[in-house]
Length: 123
Image (cartoon, rainbow, N blue to C red):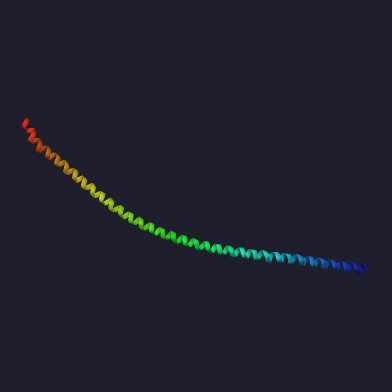
């Protein structure tokens, strides 16, 4: 009978171990399912945020492209205006040089004319 009791104890121990193993496996499964569900939810939330960030980035890039085009257009307009002003300045410089040369000639001619009229009578 002691053999039967030992056999019974052994079987009882095996059942206890088996139940404990099933409990551990069940706990791990519950933890995995809970963690997976939480992870999936967080991942879904992050995917929404990522999609929104991509959308915001696309809008920002579009605005940037539009701004760059406007700046290029403005730069071309300003370059054209500067070219016109530069051309006018060159023409004015030329006219000033011509006017100065004419004024010097007039001064010389006037000096000779008036100098001859007034300066010649004293001598």
